[in-house]
Length: 72
Image (tube, rainbow, N blue to C red; front, side, top):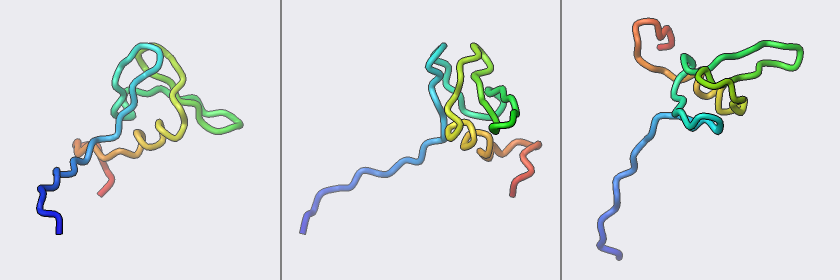
C-alpha cells in the first residue's frame, strides 16, 4: 500500500475572469443581462463584454448567504 499523505481537496466558489477587463465575476450582481427571442445574453457589468451563457447561469444561481438569498 502507498503510505503517502493526500492533499486536501478545496472547493472553490464559482467565478469567471472577464475576457475584456480581467475582473473576477463571482455573482449575479456583477452581470447584466438582456432577454430576447433566443434566450438571455449576459454581459460583464464593468466593461460590457459578453459572458458565456453557461458560466453566467451558474453564477446567477449561486447561493451567497445574504439576507436577500431566498434559496434554502
